[in-house]
Amino acid sequence: MMTETTNAANETITDSKILLTSYEAAEFLHISYWHLMDLVRRKKIPNIRFSRKVFFKQASLEKYINDLEAQSVM
Image 1 (spheres, rainbow, N blue to C red):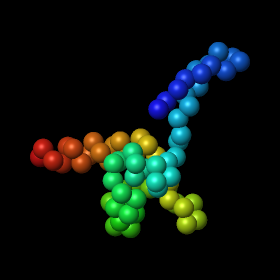
Image 2 (image 1 turned 120 degrees about the vertical axis):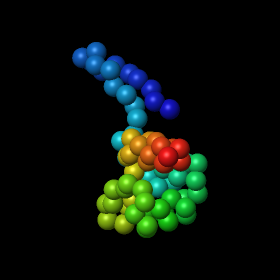
Image 3 (image 1 turned 135 degrees about the vertical axis):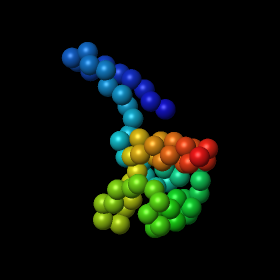
């Protein structure tokens, strides 16, 4: 859920996370955490690693979904 607020300079600020954790990304994709990590291990899904932690950009996940959809109708 994205909410919008305004700051002191009347600029609109969207309250959305830039990076999702593995659990949040799995929930976003409606797949299990273990399936997501298998996709990461096989380098099938874009991700960002910080040390041992894995993060995902929501925009990249949306593009991944769109690409899968496009492949299904070819």
